[in-house]
Length: 173
Image 1: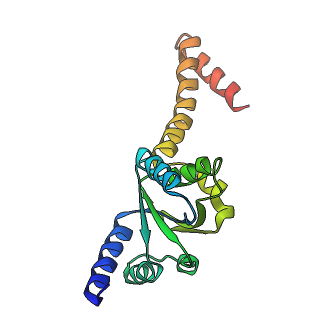
Image 2: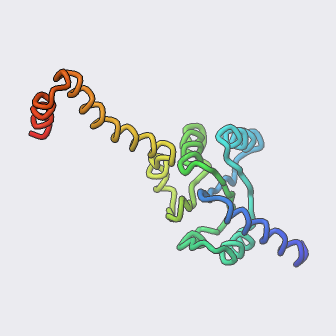
Image 3: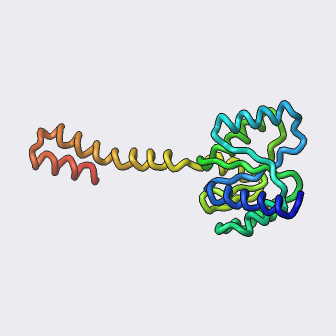
């Protein structure tokens, strides 16, 4: 690979790092062609982009990036594949599901919305991360609950002010 080709790859990797808020680094070495194909298919179905990269080029792209990757470059040893996803926990779920049949992929590290996770032992924590949409749904559910209580109190008391105050005071106690 010429110096110009390496520069081009580093530029492309830097752009990928800038465009994706959720980046996973995994080791898929040792997977045979069929298993690798199954992993690529699982990633495609989960809207995850999977790419195999050279560690030195990815490290240079991380250095050139505006983001702070913390200790993530320290895991760039051996075989490294990058998984890009719009949903923070999607690659972790794919890896965990895949590991029911195979020892790989191993999670090397992840960069999720500015947070850095290092090591395969972080897989369960990453699976449990909620997506932005799930968090918004939870917040809306929490906000609706008190509103429903007030509406039911208004309806059950016949709309009289004294009944409303009585119902609300019972809810507080």
